[in-house]
Image (cartoon, rainbow, N blue to C red; front, side, top):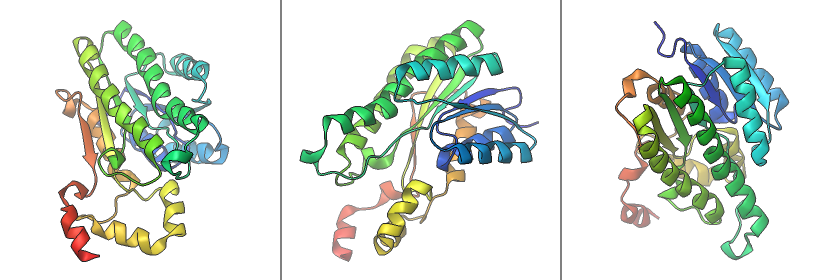
Length: 262
C-alpha cells in the first residue's frame, strides 16, 4: 500500500522547483493533490501531466498569495474539490534580488512577508479549522530555509521571513497538538532548482565552490519531496514542532576551516 493512500493534500507553489517535485511525489504515494500557482501556467500544466503519468490525481488552482483574500479562495476551492484537507505544504515563496540592507524598500519587505509569512499563517489557520472539524488530525509542513542559520549578504528581508516561519511552526505545533494536527518545517540548503539555477549561471565558479563545501555536495528537489512524504505519513506521527535541516551536512562545517582554505 502506498504511504499516502486516501490522503488529501494542498501544496502551494506547485508549478516549478520544489513545489512541483513535492506535488508529483505526494501523488505518486497515493494522495489526491491540489496545488496552487500564480504566474507559471506552463509549469502548472506540466505538473498535472507528470501527476497523471504516475497514475495520480491532481488539480491546480490559480491564486495570488500576496492577497489575503486569495489565500481564503485557495482553501475554499481546495475544499470543494477534495472535500477535506489532510496535508498542507506551504512551499510558495519569493526571493527579491539581493539588496544592500539600507536599500531594502518597505515595499520589498512587505511583499516578502506577505508571501513568505502571512500567506502560510492564513493557510495554516484555515486548514486547521477544516482538520479540527473532521477530527482526524493532519500534517502541516512549512518550507523554511537554512538561510536562517547561514546568512547570505543582501537577503535580510528574506531571512527575516524564514526565521518567522520557524517560529510559526513551533507556535502552531503547540497550539494544534491537542487536535492531532502536527506542524513541522523543512529547511533546505542550496538545492538544484530554477531559482538557484539563475545564481549558478550568474556565478558558475562561486556556485561550484559553494556546492563542494557541503560534505554531501549538491541537493535535489527529490530530497525535499522525500522528507515531505515522511512528515506527511504515519511514520512521523510523534513528530511535531520540528524544523528539519536538509543541508547535505552544511551544519557540520567549521567556518574557520573555510577561512583557512581561502
